[in-house]
Amino acid sequence: MRRYGKNTDEDDVRVRPNRKGNRPRTSIRPKHEDAAEGFVLTVDRGRLTVLVEDRVIMAMKARELGRKGVVVGDQVAVVGDLSGKKDTLARIVRVEERRSVLRRTADDTDPFERVVVANADQLAIVTALADPEPRPRLIDRCLVAAYDAGLKPLLVLTKSDLAPAAKLMESYGALGLPYVVTNREELAAGEAAERVRERLNGRVTAFVGHSGVGKTTLVNALVPDRQRATGHVNAVTGRGRHTTTSALALPLPGGSGWVIDTPGVRSFGLNHIDPSRVIHAFPDLEPGTEGCPRACSHDEPDCALDQWVADGHADPQRLYSLRRLLATRERREGD
Image (cartoon, rainbow, N blue to C red; front, side):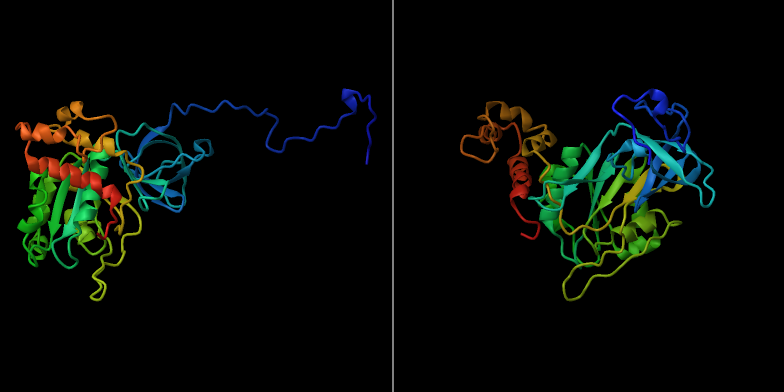
């Protein structure tokens, strides 16, 4: 082994050759100005399915993205092999700015939020009227998440052949929510799918709901050429079995919109949501908050909304609905 003295000359220093070339390393990253635009259809264990023009390709995140996540619905920039042929792999080098983000946490104590979908316009909250029984608190939580993300909520009530929709809708009438009622016979005949499709045209709609409510069955009826596996409801627990394990974006026939089917949820944590933002979904009540004390919870004796409603500026049921939604962060989903 050669040893160097204290006063070595540059010529005495041996430099190991760079096996990957002699180009010096730099922190300047390429701009990828020639990258193609893509739309993320699904994410599965680090591999992403991306629609580029009329081709579906497989891709992975480029190293320069670091820890930045890529989710279904993202608009991305893609380079590499974009042929879509078997065993080819492209790279996602940039995630474009998102116009909306639907998030949730595992529960109300979990500090880590999870992005469900990006760039959706509408949130379809699917719930069965029976088998399994509706869970209004979970619906409320989904509504809060939709309002916070700037998504338009849509209630889709399934299995109306087992129970009427009127009782459940009594609780949501003051919110003025659009809703569609379906049953199994109408789904089989295609009538229900057509009614729902009218609400989806021209929009990117994310479908959420707990397991067993018929969410994936409805998606299969909306996009008949892309059938996903469906499950059943456990007769003992009254809960459904998870059959959809990852989110998937599907185009509606005729290119009139997109449906994003998401895995069934048993909880919808709201730890990431500031309750003060929920009031923005109530434009008839929001002006009345100007007289509220600082950091008002809108459910305390000094809240100005009580007088606002008493003066006839808004329906009392609207204030009740607001307070019920705000209270969902303090409740567990099963309450």
